[in-house]
Image (tube, rainbow, N blue to C red):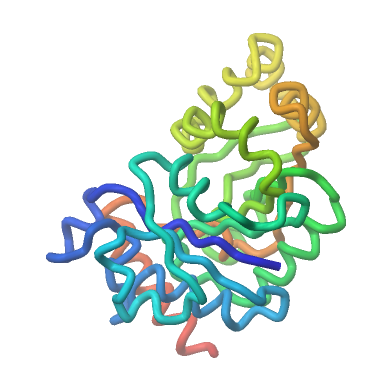
Length: 254
């Protein structure tokens, strides 16, 4: 499978912690850039055979991107970066899309995710983690949780998709990205009936998948990962110190 790593975007409060970092992807955690840590996990995966990094053009020669097979320019918006990363790829093949802020992502989690995405056979596979799975391993990591009939979940940093769905996805992806950490807003994107079901705790994963298929004209499936590492990311400046501790713990136990 081909992997696309999204390492673009503007400066934020995380990148402000490190002079010279164009965005949080290039902020060092325990001496290594976040994007480098993601690339290392992908390179160790048995299911990934090509890696495309989408990043600011000025950073394409940076050592943090050395493990990528190819670097492509990012865009102002996430949909533009995604379009850049998927350009020219086989339109019917599943592609793994990873965010660049997953400090403890590991190869086994990637292999498991890609296997599950293939078995579900959707056009888009949206990664998520159930709360009890996450709390059992990383109770100190905060998340925004969505309570569904099937359980309580948070979004992850891995998505599998077929490039042919991008035209339909682009008109929706900006809103979806903005709502990723806001369950009520996320539910409202799917319509008032879905919002009501969510408010009453009756919205199921199957309901969300069915509505997403209606909106995008393509099968959308939830890929529930048993690896909390796929959902541990760095969103805020306060997450950096926590990520440092998690990396140190993972290194000590390796």
